[in-house]
Image 1 (tube, rainbow, N blue to C red):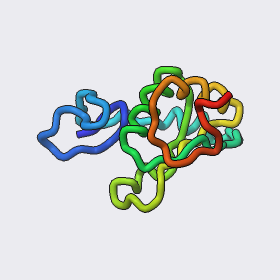
Image 2: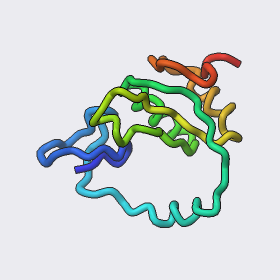
Image 3: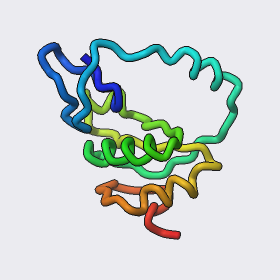
Length: 120
């Protein structure tokens, strides 16, 4: 079982995502087309913030998905196994200002940031 929003895998028997509340699905759709489109993309990714807080990750996903902003949560795949390293939010350099604005209105418990999303 998988969360279509967070892409988290769950054991059989679960029906809802513990993070975002989405209904789980049996499998995730293939993203081959999206990967092909990005192969030639040399966009520079910049770090926005680091967090150890799972609720921050869910909040970030919901806001940026709603805004249609592409992002990468570095370290998220290993986060379930070890909580030593933070999850780092990376976005395209040209989207950084838009991300700051989008995250300004939500309460985050992030541990550090390349810049404060609430600061202009």
